[in-house]
Image (cartoon, rainbow, N blue to C red; front, side):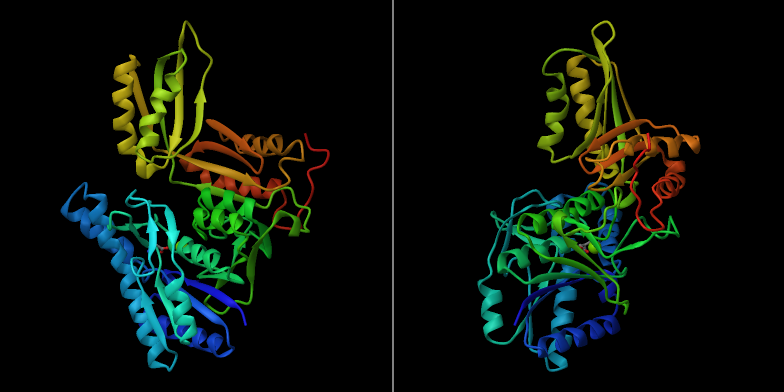
Length: 413
Ligand code: ASP
Ligand code: MG
């Protein structure tokens, strides 16, 4: 008998019919004698609709109220799922984040999990009842409702799997796993049977929307076996596993396009110790993630300082940076929205020379200008003009021959 956590995304529970189909498969799985936890997202489109309602009332609704509002999407879905399961003879009980409880810090709209209690889940197991947990939501130590960031139900599911020591965490979605690129952009994208946590983490943080990146971080940290499956009848799936379990000797596993990127530049910043800290620490205090950072060589004691952030943080970030710019005497702050980030991801990057050169060559062949570059052990990213984003993905995908069987880059320089 295994403990299995299943998470159903918005499209898997998009209507009462969908919920009924999911409930039937949950009930069948339960009859096999497993201890199941079902985690649900809001019904497809619900979270967006709620956010739009708030936006109609106020340009800046408070984050606390926004959390109280959007968390209802998951509440509705968990209750409907439990009602459906009970109606087909599978005892089930809904649990909200505050009932578990799943305790978070108080950074509303992107809270992090501090603690998760499993007592209620275990009690329901012992009574033969399937817990149906509302994903995405938690409660802060001050007793406020919080949410874990868009797509955060995945993180709820993995956190529960980790806390229970579950045998596996199954993420059900509308795609049958991870591909070498988004098939909508790159029709030749190939399905991957396995991918390592590290690669998945890069892909997830780079805009591959299949998994919430924090869920992958948690799965890696607590060694939770994670599998992405379709709830629409495909028999393909992708396992996310340890690096050692990847047999394929591919250098690059995937190419991503991240559209949620903005760039902020401070022009003529005094080139002296402590300035980078002055610029970036207000952003850190506001929980704004800074991604790529470039400071160009200083000329006559001044340098330009450029960094990227999520487009969704742009207004807040620009305000904070303008304040610092005035304090340190930087004359100009420029913000650019018409950029995207394309990245090649693979565990082979660190051991294969020539990967970056090959990627840059594929962009130059298409006449695409690279504005910023960053690299890590598992990733090479380039910021380019937005209108070339999809073309760049196809060019890089082709350069690394990802559509066929994976190839080494040996001899490429
Ligand atoms: N409903 C939330 C969202 O749309 C959380 C999730 O689906 O995982 O972002
Ligand atoms: Mg999702």
